Image (spheres, rainbow, N blue to C red):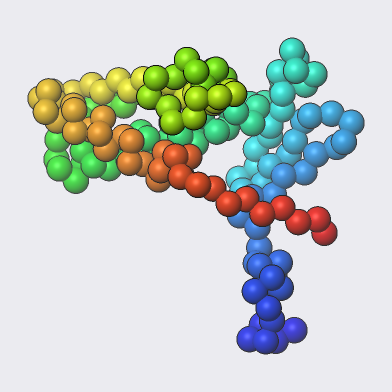
Length: 155
């Protein structure tokens, strides 16, 4: 097919996927291919899985934590600040919206991700504060805080 005459929908279908996930309908264990990387995902035993790999929310936290650490490290390198190590610890939970003072939504349940960032090195208090500010600007953080348009289609 000549792609110059293809519709936008057809062009979207022709573009290779960034990530492919395959699973057997009999269980939760999934095989994941991301470029040249092979991963697996599963659910914990308490949710009916076999706990053979991280779960979906674990991967979400991994994406945010990795992006946060990379962004902070990049900023510190560019500024030539004495940052030595970055440790990002994350937890996911569901909370009642009414219990969240800083949230706009006041009804139902909300997802909450709590993030702790430990920075080691001879940093000034101003440098530490700026690095925490920069952490909130990592691309994954910005994606999670923005409107996300997810399109599903069956083939």
